[in-house]
Length: 312
Length: 216
Image (cartoon, rainbow over all chains, first blue to last red; front, side, top):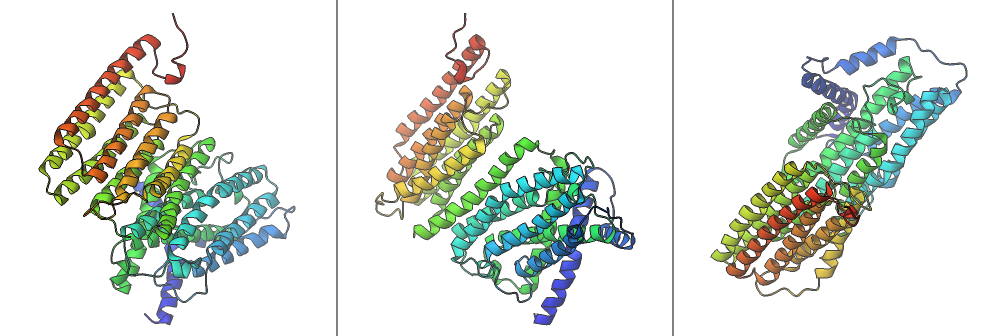
């Protein structure tokens, strides 16, 4: 593939994959409730509708609120460029694990500030919950990525996710455990079902949805799109982990790899849709326990990685 | 580091046993125990094929029948009769206990590293590490549970660990010894099942933490 073609396909994916991922989740949930459900591109129609709508802003808000949606969007776009979540990504500079983690945290900090800036009681509630969640899930996701880093002796995501022809049971184990940890911690990070129900409209229990209650019009469209792009980045990263666990993955053709990658993102979206239809929301007190289970997967990956380095 | 299929199935079995510690649902525990035992019998079968030992092959079949089918069936029948669904847990929450189990799993690799491998069996210490880790897992299981039925499950996991250790270090024991052990385990489980009914009848619960309270 030429560099230009890579850029073109990357831009198309960044625009359409997030919308299709959200669409797939909604469609799966609708089919499980015996409804036909909205078309797959409904999120796109929603966004265009939001774009045409006017915006209402409270007089007490400062500039932080207006700055938030743009900052979050830009931050997530940079992450989409840096993180190897697609095989056919164009050239990108070095992406250190810790920088990536804290770029995610940076976006979250701005969302929290905007929720507090709006001055509504629900915003402050949800901001405190989001801060707790991020505090809980950060060790899990960090440990999963660091385990991969230890295994490939680098903290650069490009090196970690470079295709190596050496496949052993040990490396497959690390990839699968880390991939599982990334999938489940993304559910916490994106405040989706077992932790928070994104479709409920009870402000007292919402996490992410309550933080963006005050946003409207184009502001809301940007925030929603950034959130769905973040979701596809996480799913793409997890798919990359799972694909590297397959034997001989590095030997198959580039186009087939890309097809497997995109297919994997949709399979994860269907899985999340199933999870959201079949499980109930966890009690808030039970969330740390759920995160501890995720942490045990990362711990497993880390132990195997360190063990395979120490014991030859 | 290359792993043989036998060692891989032993390590899979040890990881499945780690998961038992993570759940308080008795039925999930039984399923995981049965799966873990199936992998142990797979390891036995693979060892039997490696040394073309017919007796060891019979042991593998017996393990499937007695430890992976009969004992879980008997326990699920007991659970139905006693009307208990989940353990209450003691001292630490299950995920934290699972973290401790995983760290002990790692520790067992360090402990068994120096075991000399006997001729023709490759690096036998990986399987031994699985066996030691199963013993640790059973110990943690017995420490962090309150129902008598989970304590018996912990004992069974320890028994699995000892069997695996013997299998990897001595290519298994003679058939007659193995049959004796399996019979002992089966009878032990049956007797402890009867005891469970007895405890339930006289105390109206099977919580070992409250057995010291006197009743008239």
